[in-house]
Length: 264
Image (cartoon, rainbow, N blue to C red):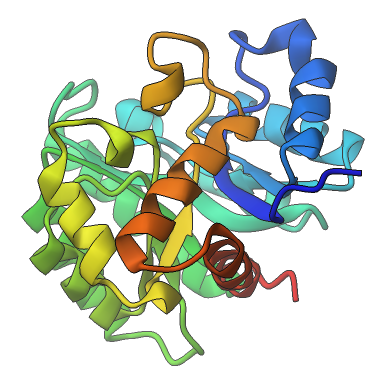
C-alpha cells in the first residue's frame, strides 16, 4: 500500500503505443506513487475504443471518447453516431479531447469548428462533461465555449481545460464559465512563470492535475517518457504555489476531479 498522498491523473493516454506492453508496470508504479484514479483519453474512434479497453482492465481507470482537432476533417454523422454509442459505456466519463489546434493545423479551421461544435452538442445531449484541447487558439476556443456554456443548465463543473497553457486572466475567465483548469508537467518548467502565476492565483477548487502521459514529462523527468506516477511532481509544484501541503492539495484536487467526472 502506498504511503503517498492520494492523487488523480485526469488526463493520460495509457493506450498509447509508447506505453504499449509496459502498461502493467506503468500501472504498478502509479499505484506505488499514490495515483488512485486515472482517466485515459480518446482522440479518435479507434483511440476511444482502445481507451475503453484499458478502462475495462483496471478498476482505477476510466475513459473518454472524442475526436481530436487534428482529425476534425473526419467528422461526419456516422462518426457522431458511433461516438454516441461508445459514450454509453459504463466506464466513459466525458467527451474529449476536443477543441481547436491552430499550431499544427492538421485539419482546416472550418472543420475544427464543425467537429468541436458537434461534439459539444453531443456532450450536451448525453449530459457529459467535456475535455478541451486548445493550442494557439485561446480566444477562439474561449469564445466558442462562452457561447456554449450560456446554454447549460447543469451543475458545475461543465468541463476541464486540458494542459492549460494560457495566463492567469484566461484561467480565471474559464473558471468563471464553469470549467476546471488542469495543469500538467509544463507548470514545473523553469521559464513558465505565467503558468505558475495562473496556478497560484486560482482558487484551489478550480484546479486539477494531469500528466498527459506519455508526453510532457515534468522537469525532474524531462526528456523521458511520462507516466501517471509523475503527476506527483505537478502536485508538489502547485502545492508550493498555493501555500498548501501536498496532502491538502492532493485531497482537494482529487475531490475536484471526482466531481468533474461524477465519480463521487
